[in-house]
Length: 197
Image 1 (cartoon, one colour):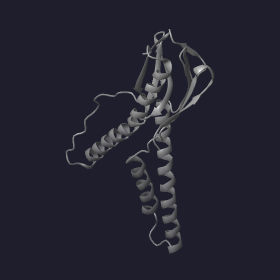
Image 2 (cartoon, rainbow, N blue to C red):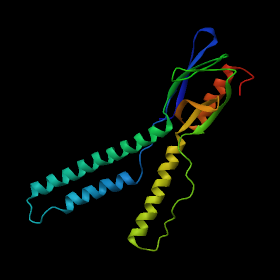
Image 3 (cartoon, rainbow, N blue to C red):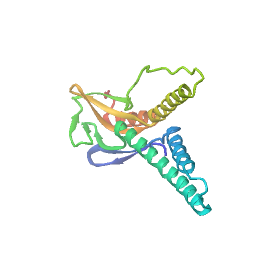
Image 4 (tube, rainbow, N blue to C red):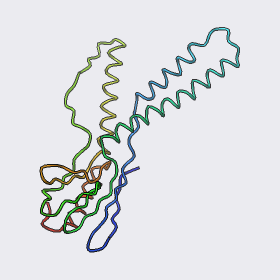
């Protein structure tokens, strides 16, 4: 699901903005690898000479367990992404200022600027895995690539609209794509009026 927002006109020129966040991404690679390893362990530890019913039962346990394990890893990853991206939000804007999601108010005079930023921290560099042809370095390279892909997918749905005032930044809403966040900022500026940041 893509992110979106709604505007609701209130009294005295006030407008309530409600942001519906984009769905958090699912983990790629790691969830599948963990599920496959689980399934292989269950099937691979079947003693030889086991009757066909128990072999079939272990196969079912392997498939169902792997499916649940994959879902659990994806849910865990989505939860971690949601913690850093501040999903959704509702706030009210008027020509006089902004009523923030936490109930405080930022007057028009106090508002320094509105800014779109990403909630996923910018991580530069890191260890570089050089594939020397061994199984371990191939796994290390694959894990590094998987982390990069997951991070890029999380970045794409973690944009936030923030209001800066009094030397601090207040998150108004998050969990958006970049296009949604910039559209929201444009509409908030329109309600604030022509001299807004």
